[in-house]
Length: 394
Image 1 (cartoon, rainbow, N blue to C red):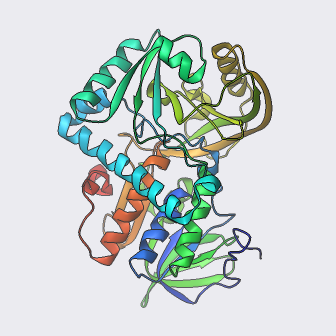
Image 2 (cartoon, rainbow, N blue to C red):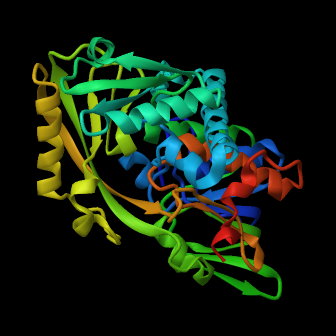
Image 3 (cartoon, rainbow, N blue to C red):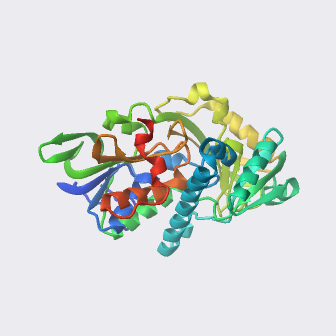
């Protein structure tokens, strides 16, 4: 079996036992593994395919806005303090991830670009984007309003009536970032095993057992860092994590100046970033295909939605000439309040979950991994971590 990255081979065989087993090698699983290893905990990550694939690789890589729900609506639902706590958690997560990648010298490999997260308004969303900007500014976040002319200078798009820039946010290349974290976790003593499918988690008199297609791994704790599969491993999750199918594409672009940071429209309906080599990554338009996206558990291309997405970009950036190089689909786990489930499952303190990021796993996952590791290690709780407790749905 080949390792997840040249020069950092994963173990060829499963360990007989690991104190903690993490199931799933996306951004959530690798973030958790990294923090467990840094806490000196014996941990093993099991990935059925290759690290950084699945929902993580299907993400575009935009880090802002961190939550799909606009800030002013979150403030209305949770109060100004609750909204500030959620966004502070996400911004702390982005900062921490950036620090680790820089310390590794992996900025280029991970596509790290924290030159700002842009949330842009179109005519129908101008008022809502203004309300979010005003609420963020009042809460003390580093945001700046952009006029329509300033938006055009930054991205070259047509039809944008304004927007705001969130400092400290931006974009990453999701799959490579997860692989970087896995490598850092290995260097700190963790194990990474790819191409091993976890069939189920069972109990016997000695504790938990991960049953895989390559044998058993006994564990004191199991962390489910998956979307669709989490329901298969534990009935305690019920229907709280809803699978929704997303679409994305990559394209070589001519006639479009290099765009800095990450870009999103209101409610993150469309998101995009441009890599340093000029390649464009674009996703979204799910709002026009709920009947074909909701409760879908298999990643399949939706030709109509792909066409809508491409047409939106061509009409918004008429001077850009796209040559689509790749199209993809991915499954993302959503919760009813847009916040992930992070923590022990109700009634099962030795089974933990980190899932249900509602399309916002990249900005939250690193700090959520620290949240789990701190709990496992019995250390001081992470500020704001109680917001993600799975018990909130019980």
